[in-house]
Structures are given as C-alpha cells and as structure tokens.
Length: 472
Image (cartoon, rainbow, N blue to C red; front, top):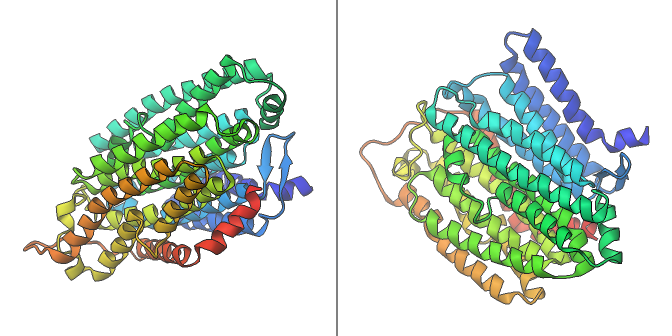
C-alpha cells in the first residue's frame, strides 16, 4: 500500500487518461470538459509531487525512483502542461483542431515524461521516451488540414525513429558489456571494472540518441521545421517539457559515469557539443523573421547552455541544469503563449513584422512578451539570467572557464534577436495594426508564466538550495 502512495503522481495521470477516454467515447461535447479535467489532474499531480518530494525511494524492483529530483521534474512537467492547456483552450478552436483527443494525447505525453524522469533502468527510459515521442508525433501533425503541420509531423516521426534506433543500439551494447540495464548495475560495473570499448561505444550511441531529443548540434536539423509547422501550443510543450524530460534521461545515465570515472572523455565530447550548440543556435537565430523559427534556434542555443552543466559533471552543474530547465519551461511557455494569441486563424501573423506597434494597441501583451524576451536573453533580475549563471559557475568550478566564456559570448549574441522583438513592439509603428482575439484562459497562463519567471529571478538561491538538497 505504501508503494501505491509513492507512485500516486503516475496513478493520477494514468487514471486521468482512462477517465478522459471514457468521457471522449460517451460524451458528445467532451472537448468542453476535457481541458478543465486535464488542468485539475496536472495541478493535483504537481502539488502532490512537491508535497512528497522528501519521501525518496525506489520501487518496482529498482526500476523507478520516487521523491527527490524525480518529483521536482514531475512538478515542472505537470505545472507546465497545465499552463499549456490554458493556452490551448481557445487556440485550438481558432485554428480548427477543436477535438477532445488533443488533451488525451497531452496527458499521455506527460506520463511518458514522468517515466523518463523516474527511470532507474534503461528499459524504463526507452519506454518513457517512446510514449512521449509517439504522442508528440501525432500532436505535431494534429492540424491535418495544414500542409506545414503534416510535413512537420512526418519529419519529426522519421528523424525521431532514427534517433530511437541509436538509443536502442546503444542500450544493446551497454547490456552486452555490463550484463544489466539497471542504473545500479551500471554503477557497480563502473566501480569494479575498467569500461570496455564496447561499453564506451554503447554510451556514445545513447548520448547521440538523446542529443537529438534535446536538439544539440549536429542533431538539431528537425527543430526549426517541426517547431514552425506544429500547432503553437504543441510547440510550447514540446520545446519545454520534452526537452526537460530528455535531459533527465541524460542525467540518469551519465551521473553514475561521472561519479565513478570522474570527468573523462565523455565530458570533453559534451563540451564540444555545448560550444557548437550555443554558437550555432545564437548565430542562425539572428537571420530568422518567423518568431517560431527564431525560438526554435533559441531552443538549440539554450540546450547548449544546459550541456555546459553536464560537461562540468559536478554537484552545482546538476543543480544548475534543473533550475535552468524550470526557468526555461516557464519563459518559453509564456513566449509561445503570446505568439498563440497573436497568431491568426490561418496560422499567419507569426512573423516579426506582425508585431510592429503591438505595444500601442495591446500594451499588456507587449509587456508580457518583453518579460519573456528579456528573460530568455539572460538579463537580470529574471530567471533566465540565474539559469545561465549557475551553469557557468559550475563550469568555472570544473576548470572549464573557457566554456563559460564562450557561453557568455553566445548569450551576448542572442541578446540581439531577443531585444529586436522588444524594439519592433515599442519603437516602430504601422498603419495596419494587427487584431488579436481575446482569450482570458491564455492570458491567465501567460501571466502565471511571467509571475514564475520573475519570482524565480528574485529568489534563485532559495530554489537552488531546495534542488541541491536532492542532488546529493
């Protein structure tokens, strides 16, 4: 019975999926009930996860962790998903994809993320990855009347399946070397034996597979087209919860390696990934005029900053990554939330010029988007600044000062395209101002995101200390 209470967050979402399916089958207007049911499930799970974070343990024959960092990630996924549902209620009506299964797929994707966060076995990691990915493939192509959405869904599916092949083959080689796929078995192997070439190749393939999911260069090619083609609120969840879940899998697999082998060749490889990812994302984003594509390249750059924490392979690096993921989730959700409100019925008004003079007609929307742009640029006192600060400090502590310096340079480059949005909204005018359909639910979600970005920026040390308690 105690074990049931420990996995209650998973049971709440799983039960919610079953209940949602029943409502969808037997109630004709299920799309009215399902969003509010989903929000209730997500908020209940997020609250319960934080409440029980100190009750750490391992269940299901050492395959699933509960409490600690796992529950912190549960909170990030579920609270982020609740905000995404608020953003989606009016948006999916506007673009003509008003179907109840939208929310069922969202619940299922979050359940996959939760499996990834709690996995203590590589098999659980793969199951969580596939559940999340399959839901995102469908959601990406959910606007099936739009060619760009269909194209994005197909690209994501084909490249995602290819990346999953790397993960599976890597797992097979790791199993051949270690004789186990459990994280504890991996730790025992690394403590007592010198890793073989087969093990090193297997771990490399595993890292490559998840580098695709976090959009690290050179495995980023799917991101711009998929982010642009997918429904905007799907892009919001995919770029935040999906990225955070992939990072949890990398942390789960790499922490035993770093604990037992120290900083090794994998850390050097991750440093190369970090540099390429930061600079490529920041430089290419400058030339983008479509805001969704710009945020796609921005997402690549932010993955690079977080990989710095992995390269540092220390306590502060892990804590910094978790803080950064939480901050990035709410910054990006808010930014995509504003884009989803401004976007028109025919999926236009997503280019930069559409935001010309937005502050004159919709000052609140412009102010909120400015907060998110400044936070993403890493300007204090917002959460984005401290996210970068913590991972840069971890790199300096690991004698990777050069990596932190490149991170600062990439951040300075990226400030240009973030601030350009603010300039267009406040300092340029147009004779044909855009019309925005009001959505109080979306505005609430955007406001909550902005509030969290500000609060995390005002009290970063308290949040990082809370996270550090569970890092060990």
